[in-house]
Image (cartoon, rainbow, N blue to C red; front, top):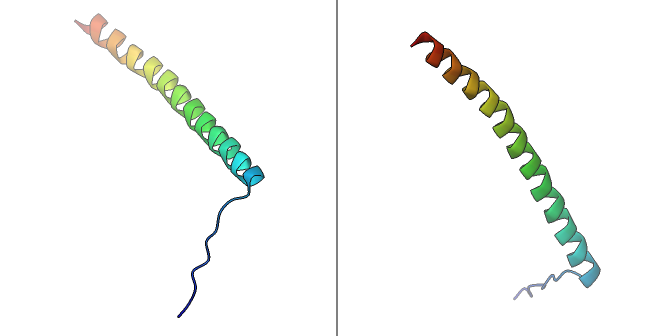
Length: 54
């Protein structure tokens, strides 16, 4: 019968993991904000063109 090892993170490693998750979330948030900014500008231009053509 094989014994299963239980792997638990050392308290210092758990803190590092939390920091890594925070950095990942920050990066994702920056990418989302940048995408919304670029798309918002493009959509605004499309609506302006549609408004002037009417």
